[in-house]
Length: 454
Image (tube, rainbow, N blue to C red):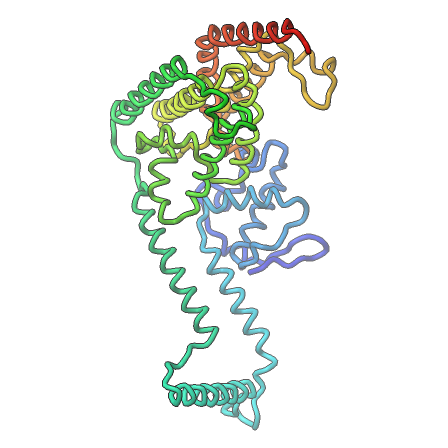
């Protein structure tokens, strides 16, 4: 039943209101939702009466198959209401839309169903037209088949039949791969001990961090003659490879035959963690906007840190701190038993890069284009780092208390905090390397200045 618009407002009858599913102690049984419940769905600014009105309105649109229609005012409350209703009041919206379309089609055909003659058994004009068209089609197909038989060829299929056949084959392949990938989905949380869930991940984290430390200490950059792309700076070359790896994983999520392997390797699921996903999720993004935002941050922050520490320590910080941040998320989820959370993305590694750069350059200022240096001289690296830590700490505590909140449901604050801590530790370990690198660069600049000019 679709609500009717009267004077800029929506009005419904009693039948539509009775068709709404009931919730025990919730919105439609025992009174409407309370102010606190409305605030949890729409935000604290939403009035209780308006929030309940929007919930009723969106639910009636779902039942009537008109979910694509807009509601008065902003459409953001409709999206929030729709997300809450789909979780708490499951309903087959696709079937409702099909029912509405069939009803509209029958209504559109009613003017053409006039009958010739008198009585209820008279022949319909629409049936006459349909039969005439069928006779013409059969005649044309018979003539085409006769020509093909005379030429000794197989009767060709029509364009519509070819398109339908290819569509059915494509849908069958997609269903096959989706069913195959769905075999790994968990229908219940496995009963596993804390040691079994976190033990292998802890060993892998310790091993990767140890290898990263050894790599940072023993890496020797190639000579200028041995470089593959000499016109590209070392920082740009390193970060371009990391960006290409992240983009390749993003493409892999869209290849259905790879979906099952991607879920095991590139998505960290604490309810049943695969050890390989602890490192694979550092390169994994499913949403395009998530990928673009992280790659821009990686290019800006990573380029500055690469220039300060070099390629070996930079890659060690990215990989070692990235897996450490993922391990912090895993331990937090297991301890608080929040099995509905998963994580992926390189934001934990980027947080570590930011923390490392801020600690190494604590005595320097930050210049933000296009603002003059005087306007940003108050923004010191450590001040910027504390600002980001405070934002993620507030988000983590709020989520721990209230659960997922719509506008930041995709932000993994715990992984960010783990990245900050790992980056601060990495900065302390890299201070001697950075000091030695800066002394060497200073001596090179002095030699260049003292060299005789032609």
